[in-house]
Image (cartoon, rainbow, N blue to C red; front, side, top):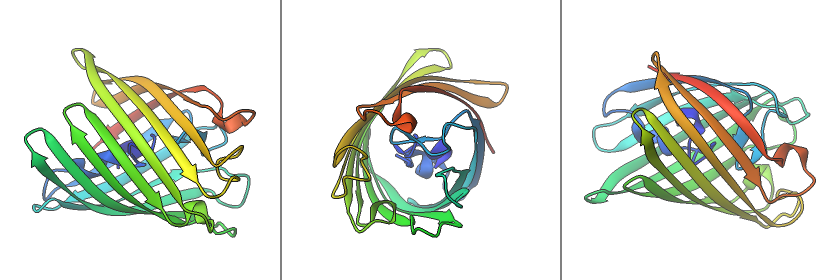
Length: 226
């Protein structure tokens, strides 16, 4: 779940497209520092710095497992998000892949019961991917949610890429979407590698009005994989 890229990032596929990137039989670790942790358009750290990291293990048969963590700030006693996930990635045809996964979001110290699960299907073809997410208890509520994601990445120059994302979240609980039962998030960013580090500058936005943590913002991140 490198940098929680699910599409999730954040991620939001990832809450997570990077989850299956570990080579078969290898453990891959990643750590990152970001100016904000944005998940589906909303800041999870109250617009403050985020320190994140995780581990992935890929099996020879296409299955993988992993964990990923970040600091969060929801104005309560919760300070840490810990994600546990597993899945199966395989090729449908040449250049077309399917990734099926399950993710459990756990918020340490949370007394309001934010913990929840997501079931994810992500279809990849070339430099593009489409994701479908279903949660029966979105952010610990009694309401379900469906999230649709589209991502596209292409090379700008040697060692540089442009990464585009759009997502649509629909829930049964208007409080989760803040001003309605659905909303759109989007992002555009450039990324590169230098000195063994991955660098990214990403602009995030939503169609949610009058909510500070969903405002337009630019996020810079530095990450390292091992």
